[in-house]
Structure formats: C-alpha cells, structure tokens
Length: 611
Image (cartoon, rainbow, N blue to C red; front, side):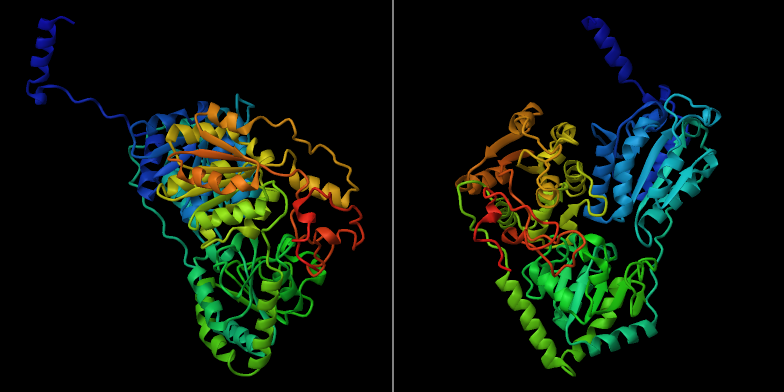
C-alpha cells in the first residue's frame, strides 16, 4: 500500500460510521444459545477438545465470555472438570466430540459418579438423521454412560435445550451430587434457536431436615454410650457440613476417625482426631473403632477399604447413621438409628444435647475412653527418622505439608496416595482431591489443572507416582500453555508400587508386570514441555529441593527417587478385620502373609510402629 492509498483509507475510516453498515450478527442457533446458557448458569471455565460433531459449539465459543481450556486428551478434560468441581463445590463442565472423544471421557465421568462430584458433560453426536446408521464416529454414548451418570439427555430438538440444560445443572448439584451427560447432535446445534427464551437457572433442591423422632432416638443412644466414636466420611464436605462436624466434635470431645475422602474435615492436630481408618489407617483409629460401643457415622458409606472384613467391623458397636442419601443408610451395615436428611443440620441439632450428656451419666467412662484413645494416638504416631541416606517418602510429604500448609493437593492412585492421606496434615477436605472409590490412575495432573484454574491464587500441588504420571503426562503441555503454577512431586520407585507390595506379601513374591525400571528421565521429560524440573535422591537434599520447588514462579516438577522396596504401613490384609493390622516386622503373623519384607525397605527398620 503506497502513502496516497493509506491516506485515502484513513480518510474513509474517519468518516461518519453511521454510513458504514454494521457487521451482521451471527444467527442464533442451538450452539450459540447453549453458550449463552452456560454463561447465564455462572459457568466461567470449561475443559474440552474439539472434533467434527461438536464444531458448531466451538464456533459459538469463538469470542464468547467463557474460558475454554484446551487439554491434550479428553480424559484430561473430564479429570480437570472433576478437580475444578471438587475444589470449589461448583459444577464442573467438560466437552468432547462424538465417538472416541466421548468414550475418552468415560473414566472421568465414572470417577465423578463414584465420588459424587457435580459435573455436566457435553458431547457432540452425529446428526439425528444418521443416528443408528453406524455413521462415522457414532457411538451410543447415552447407553454407554447410563450406569455412571445421575442422568443422561439425548437431544433431538432444539426446543428441548432450555429444559435440558436447566435440568442437567439442577440434577448435577442437587441431593447427592454427580455427573450428568448432555449428548448433542450436530443438527440440533446448528438449528435455528432465535425463538428460544432466555435461559433460566433452576434452583438447587433443598435437602430436608431429618425427622425429630430420629434426632431424639440418636441423642438417646449417644447418651447410653461409654465408648463412642465419630466416623466421618466424604458426605461431610458434600453436604457443606464441615463447620457443623467440627463443632459437634469440639462440643462432645468424642474420639473421631475419618475416611480417605474426609481428611481435613477435622484438623489433623485436633486431639480428638485419631486419623484415617481402614486398610492403611492408623492403629489408634482402627483400634478405637473395633472397641467402640457406638459409631456416630456422618456421611460415610462403610466402604470395604474402610471397614476391612465387614462381618467383623466394629463388632460391639451400635450405629447412628447420618446421611443425606437414604440409599446409603443400612446398605452395608444395619443402623440402629437412621438419620436421613441434611447432615449439617443434623449435626448442629445433635451437638447441644450430646455435649450436655458428656458431663452426665457415664461421664467417667467416657473420659477414660477418650484418654485411652489419645494415649494410643501418641504411642502409635508415625515417626520420620528413617535410617539411611535415601529419601523416605512419608518424611518428605510431612515436611512439604508443613511448608505449604494451605495447599490444595491432588493425588494419583497407589502407594503415594496412601502416604499423602497418612502424613499430609490437611486443613480442609476440599484441599485433598483424590480418586477415592474408582481409584483412577492419571487423575492427579489434570485435577490439579482444574483446581488451579478454579482458584488461580491457591498453592496447588500434584503428588504422583511414576506409573500414574505417564497416564496423562501430555497435560504438561496444558500446564505450560496456560502458565499454571502447579507444583508436581513425582515419587519414582520404578515400579507399580502398590501392586508390587501386594505381590510381595500375598502372592509369594511372584512379581508380574510391575517393573518400570525403563522409566524415562522425568526431569528431562518435563523440560521438554518447557516445565522447570529438578531431581532429588538423598534425604539431606530434600529440604532445599522442596523450597526450590515451592519458590518456582511457574509450573515445576520435583523428581524424587525412592526405594523400589518401600511399602505402605500399617496394612490390614485382605479378609481380616481392622484390629489385625500389620507392620513390616509382622508380615508372617497371619495366614497368607508368608513373605518377609525386603531388608532394603525403609519400613523394615526399628522406627516401624510396634505391635
């Protein structure tokens, strides 16, 4: 363009703009209406990956006031939305195309269903005229996901959009939360939606209060107990009952045990907190439950990893079961008193009369019981003075929890998951995001992405293992693209550690397909994605390495080499009750545990908890 032409263009541009026709607005189709509905619903971030049948939706996203995060695999989208929802309590949203895009979401959807995480999952589908013809990338995602969602919607008319979208979000967050699927054919996305009304969000269903009769029965049963124990589960955070739960324990001073998903519901330092119960729970917690004469169960479901051999779980205890989901009460263990309703309200109503009873009848017996439980907590408390020069994973994790006390921690699945639950001192259950019921490897990194985007100012730490990390390692690209300051602690024992531990103890050391000694150099891998990385393999270097990791301004990875033979202790063997816990020096004491631990294991030394 020469100078005279440029001057002419400038002159034209400076003329009265009223004479210049405005750019025509894009027609309101189903996809654009859906984008506006998501904004009206309060969605600010969604996670996805585009493809053929969902392209009209992605076209509608162009220039919209929604932050879309492009992950590098649809499973990453589902887990990121999952982490966003767990960290916030809000509905997470993920998007994928039909066929393989939809099927790649399935594991993340199943995880949300089993851990009661509110999500709305939007999938593209082939045009309605092609449905049932085995068209390209056609899958019956409606039928495929039916067992793992609260509800599925397959839209066939654009007129159904207002009802379906509103109902999907209401269902996802109401009652016991969970995932809802919207399967959206391409022609519904492109259909004219100019006649549709503005979106209206549906109110969340109110959880009813428990009946007065149940409350009176619960208080009466608690008054009779000499050895009561509070057993808290994931329903505490789902029901926004953390404050009420803490107040109940504070007022009654009843010894308390927590499930994996309830870690942080009571501060770790609280004297009544005996720790996690179950397969890898503390001795203090498991012994208290097995000897209790009453369990006050709040938002827990008697999962097999918590109860051990169910027929021998808490054999002397009567049960007061509080839960918002009537289906959980009495499902696995009969309840003497069923308190179905808002868990927070139930705990708040129970606290004053129960606190008064603690000073009345059986007060002396309850004080003696509490004293015994607290003495065991101290006597059997974990120690971190492992001998040797190598890195002792529990000590590293405990130290990091002290250095980052308010961090949101996302975990993958395996030995490191149990070490985090045992040794990190959580301040709130929304700071501990882990795949509980499904136990899905590959959860940690994308969940950390979701948690960081939900709260950009939070300190987010992903603790992973070498097996889990490679399942969604591609999401390092997502970390880099969006500059998310997630800190990754990668515990590398060059094995599928939990499977190896079970093969050692219960399969006569027949190690089958657990060798990961050909792992890549994970620090080099991280740097290839543009992520700062450092490595540590000596205990003396842990403090400096953790500080350097936390001080990194952006995303960073700490590769930690640990002993392949390291095991998680204590352990309740399969088909045994929770009183039959094993430590490293006890593995030959029960049938089926006839293989001694390797002498190279850090837990095989005298710091192990005594019997």
